[in-house]
Length: 163
Length: 391
Image (cartoon, rainbow over all chains, first blue to last red; front, side, top):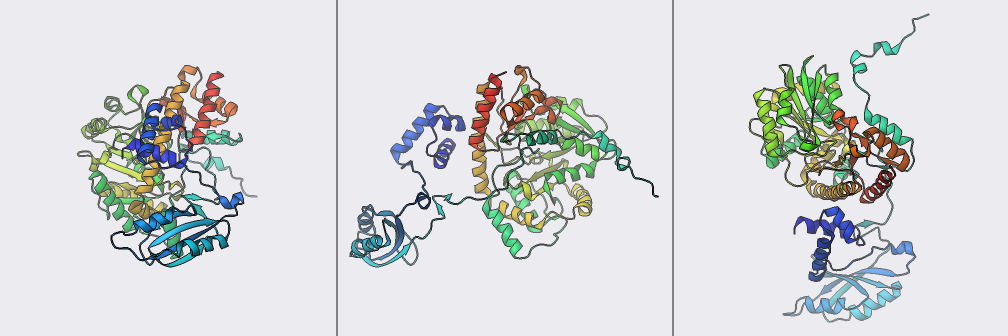
């Protein structure tokens, strides 16, 4: 990865709404080259998506989230792939991860109530042949999401002039 | 009835000769104005990385609160020694050639006091960091300024250096990357200075506190040049690279005879640097590179932003390749540096530091620190543009 690419990605990661002109001013590259590089990364999948990190609790969201850990039995020749594809096609399933340790897969599932999430797990996930065992943990509070701390920190202000 | 005391009578004569700090004056001015955007800060706007703070907190919880060796914790000196050996292939014995100090400010004061006899001349390239000349004066030495200039991108020119060397010259203070100009000197430029230092047998105090904040090419450590290790008192610290300004943590690397002299003063005046800060410094050297490099990339982006912004406004700014300062020229506006800085402060509420605070060679220039957020820099540039347009 060349230095300019890293700079562009760090800028967009900090603020996905940063304009190409602003990124050009921060990197010293001409704006046209910034646009070209970004387009290339969007095309080849390095930039997957532009996202907003939302504090849903503050917005008054009623949605409930749960982290589900699955113990699975693998099918010969198929590995995890077939099962994972079935799982992530559900829009309720917001993330799917393969883990080391006691459990094989970790899902994040969202719904409008705990009952809805629990029923989803019971009817759609636990019933799958390969799923041996599930453990559901409901998320009570989110403190940090995607590298962003959702609560304010007090800071001692710097002096305005120092040598 | 006892005789009344007139305290001013007891103040040492040198105090009257050392000029008051220009920085102090602008601090006082800035305090009179609300809602300023400050480009006048000489410290990082980052908080010290959490892993360093956490190591310090843990050490307090473990009850590590006592004095350390005068030289500093041996673990820290060993890390520093390893760091310099790996990065610059320059070896310092942790037992006798490294001194841990409370900030580069203390290291500088010790270095000057350790080598200066009354009347010794110490050369100070200008514009210079505000502490150099006063420190020489406090030590009883004579500060000899030598100007650097924009035409040479504020690098110290070997011929100009040679022209101010006399038989009283003891040492030269170098500071690259430079505060206030942001200038750097490449290996070739430094070799020319090394030749002069060797030829005239003078010592070099090299303040390299901004060495990690180098953009475009590697930093040249003066002590790593051929024959310079024994001729250099190398000063460096943790304030800028690891955002540890408040910790007061730095070190000096020098031949044992110099370190032991510096230690002689340090052991009586400071005793040792704070233990918590030393613990933090160990953590910084062992695990801090990743976070440090992230900060440097962020400075680099802001550097582009502020330099291109100032040039667009018409305040010509050479490209600074180190530290976190831009040094634009205000000459063509017809205002002096002080007039520009003061009017800008009161009319547009932007703090900058006039170059004259750093010596006469800074006349016509402003020091603009970009150790502040991108948003603040953008706002400041907009206000500066409005100010210049209104002139």
